[in-house]
Length: 471
Image 1 (cartoon, helix red, strand yellow):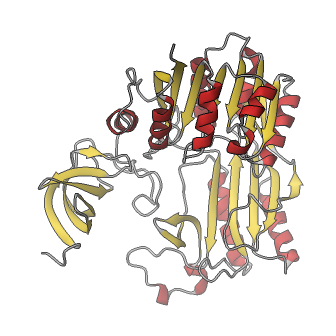
Image 2 (cartoon, one colour; image 1 turned 30 degrees about the horizontal axis):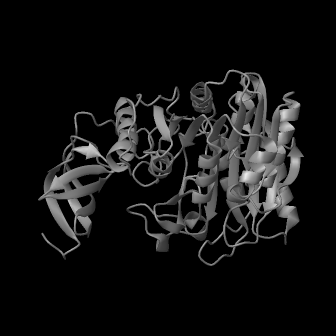
């Protein structure tokens, strides 16, 4: 049944493990085979579409025998939507796989000496746990098997949902998503139908044309507040925009903060755009241990609010503060961790790249009655210098929560010279974390490792490491 060298069928393959990327893993004739949507114990026929010198990639052509562990996916969009790929895998197996992923990155690949890695902390909620989702309007939605776009009227070729796989211009029309609590689904479906009924032109991502572009929904688990942001490609017809915003407000009075954005750029990011408050409050809030955290339209906040509390609690425990320490919180965002640990520190200094996030951190600390936190904006490698540390005091503890790429080598060198007694490294990417920890291993030993599951049914894992300065 061979088709060509990189397009052939392998029959009755037993899936043995789960890879860090979330794919099933098998071994065939000494080569590693990665299989989409497969779990350990599945016996499958695999259509191989890529073959390199030491590995292959494929997708399931036929399920010969499903694993005894396989569950029925709960989402109607499973298998097409790019998210929640582990729905078929029992949750306890997901946690074990994430713990193993951290161990592999730190020990097997990073060659680091670590104490016993603690089991991944589970999320109390495995569905409806996200507080933020972004949906994209597309005039060229993804068509399902059996659909013939040539037979569909233009309005049925439109979609509002998530991007599919590696296709930047294809959007899967989402009807029911299990990631964010209501009224998220109701809002999205209402906006889609209103836009179609009133002839609004959905955006064409390939041609960069059209009118309505994206929909952001933010919700607060602790206060129940809802923020909605609609983005439009131009401002040529403000009456239509106003009519949609008014209809949305009337249908969903629980929306406490309603914004719109006019985005004329080729990409959907709104971080550099003006967010115009149309109705309601300028922000929503999350409450954690009595602290109120302000969340604006551009604010970063951990997208699993309830699990964020566990994550920050681990970071605070690992910091082992007595009340007299100077703490540096690097990549502080809106200052959530900085404020969370401030009651157990003498002084906390937060540094963050985004100026608006720093302003929010300052406002938040003031509103929370916190006087021992100071926040500074700028690129980390430019702000965190020997002179900055000399001016603000040597750190006893440093907390790092960098983006996926990890920290810049210049930042690592400054930290090493500052030589804080203790560090807490929070990471959403154990691979880049392992690389950075290898640099710190010249002076620091890893004393504790705690994975935290922030994103159930996905392969992503957050990891927290405690480091002590060696004597």
